[in-house]
Length: 147
Image (cartoon, rainbow, N blue to C red; front, side, top):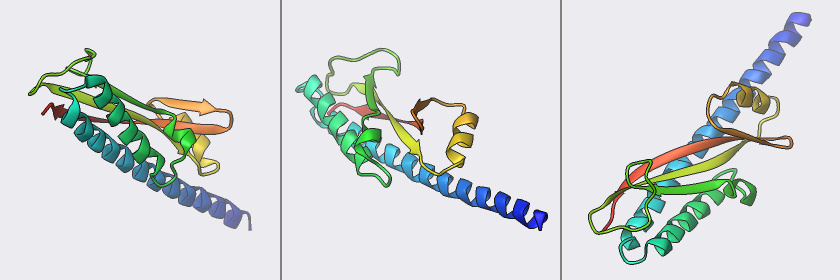
């Protein structure tokens, strides 16, 4: 009887871990897609008005991250968009033909009970804890040439 309870508990934890990992995988796909569309939106109008192009790219990424499966305004508020020349130097203007790095960072909430604490403790990357909510920060980078 005790063996059955132990095996059942381990099986339950394993199934919950699979569920959380599939949600993380879907979140990573959404972050990659958001970075792609944000980079395209930025490249189209960066040489005309850099500030407006950055705002447009951020709003595009914000919209996609908010509408992803499991997305909400709370997690979309943990979205950051950095635009740099070489991955480190900040950019504030662009000329046609310039290659810029668009880096998107988005917080994805760990929602599966018990597994959220385990994955949060084991994750080597950036992570945030707000009350009883655990978030992993997912990154996506795209290089774009200004049109």
